[in-house]
Amino acid sequence: MSELTFAVDAMSASAPVLSVSPVVLPAPGRAVDLQVRVSAPVTGSELPIILLSHGHGPSNNLSSLNGYAPLAHYWAAHGFVVIQPTHLSSRTLRLDPGHPEAPLYWRSRAEDMSRVLDRLDAIEAAVPQLLGRLDRGKVAVAGHSMGGHTASLLLGARLTDPDDGKEVNLAEPRIKAGVLLAAPGRGGDALSAYAAENYSFFLTTDFSEMATPALVVAGDKDTSAHLTVRGAQWHTDPYVFSPGPKSLLTLFGAEHGLGGVSGYDVAETTDENPERVAAVQRLTSAYLRSELYPDDPAWQAASDALMAGPNPLGRVESK
Image (cartoon, rainbow, N blue to C red; front, side):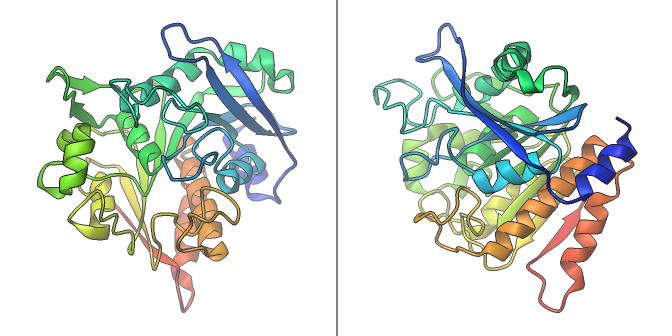
């Protein structure tokens, strides 16, 4: 498939989607084997891949391969293969809270994504409808909330392991672009006392080496007071403190759920807004198409459309 053909297909009406779960990937040394959901358009070839990392919200099942249907289904219907792991932080696994990485398993989460890329052959074998349809050179990562932190590490952000004092570099060169949704910002004095005490790995977050192209999506009402003293601006840090090329989508009136990206009609969404979710769907899909296929004008068109109306849902800036 040519880049132009993919662009035309992706801009057309959404396609039927197949979704298969759980696909179980053996993971020696991990507390449990890695389970993933795979969603893909029923037709099409040379399909780009999005690795989607869930957050760590209060519900029992959204923080797993069962969450984020509004994003996974939309992306798959518009030409991507979406792979969603259940990270060890998921409440669905009910792991021992005494594990040294519990409860957020920051390192394991990033390692899950590299493991998925290592096991694409096994995923194709488990989902025979996908056999020979993946474009393994076109890989992106997306994550919401704690999943945004996971994605940032894969895109090149660094931190110091609080247990041994060593700098951690989990950048994944097979990933060519990313989307950070309501992701955590920098550490140091930006953190709340609660976050500094309970999530000490956040203290040293450094975006200065996060060189892979990425779209940062932040709500201007996402104060996250339990994590930061800087208010909503904290969630723009992955854009502000990283090198370009980067883009920032600021959603007006959006809180941490960005209108409801983690699931349909979920109680933990404090700012439920279908139009806002639709904007996130359109703009993230367009951004990734244009990053993975540089001749595709989808991102510029979607950005222009966002700002064209009398009451825009947000604004875009780039560097």
